[in-house]
Image 1: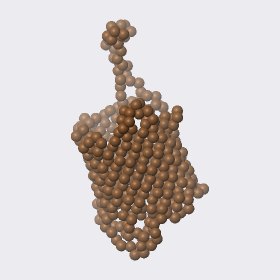
Image 2: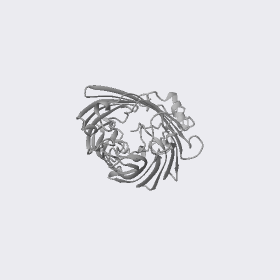
Image 3: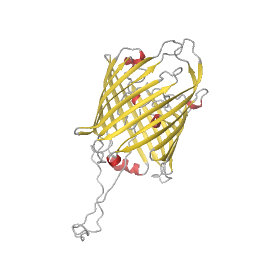
Image 4: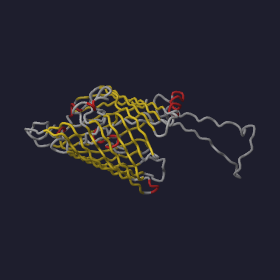
Length: 414
């Protein structure tokens, strides 16, 4: 899961007006021809994108000059089995645009620092995966630091540095509203992701509007905390190679309806112990694949300004069962954006299931965990949202007692 970076772009418009005959009227004392246009008015605080406002225009000035600053605070409060847990999370990001800085076209430098504090609810649930996509032990770290270059009219993108590989290979479009960790990443794939992002090199090529190919190599054993820029070079750290191809289609009125089907595979080197046997063997690699499809259907496809509609997502992942803690995963979700008069609210339901193995040295057959989630995300402004959330787990961890988790997430763009 990734808390997204929000772009701030300033725009200005000049109204043109003519008389009934189509010719501009002559200047008068009240409307001189050489009068400068009125400067664009800044949006009101409630209509803006940030809780701290536009800083008297300084935020937009910085963005126009190629410097974008974003800070997002999110907080979870969840309860399960009679216990309550609260955690908070801070994202602080800086984005530099090389073109707007007057340097060269297509370059982006990005840095993201994060702080996680408090405690999650998974200790009370016992799931094999974090209950929420913010859940982790408390930490402060440099999560991402990379340079990206776009070439050939965005048909080729190259990115080098510490990064969240799940952004490109796991997270589906429009899937970020779900809180359960498994809707934003494949639990079968060790792709570096929040909070264990990693050093790597990534490339994406788009030879046609409907086809995109991606490939990357990442460090194999990233760790949480600090700068995390030296873990990749330790002895035995290994590496991860991943590639995918995605096909996009459009249909219906105005071709707004559409979806993307992607398939990918990965191979990780390192040290892996055999699972499910009393005397485990040692392996030096692991591998797997993943499939994903998302489909977006708009309520009014002829209106480009109407975002209301349905998104359906289907996902499947597989990894080698003799050396993977989770070797098969299948999940899906449906979310409707625009609830009645609340045109910017989202409601969704989804679920999934995966197999879970015991630690090495225990000869026990794999078991299965299943989860469901339903949420309502109320966006009161562009910078503040409240999201009540309900989840249910069957056999958490593969053998635990069923659990119901209820809670709420608050998110503010500062």
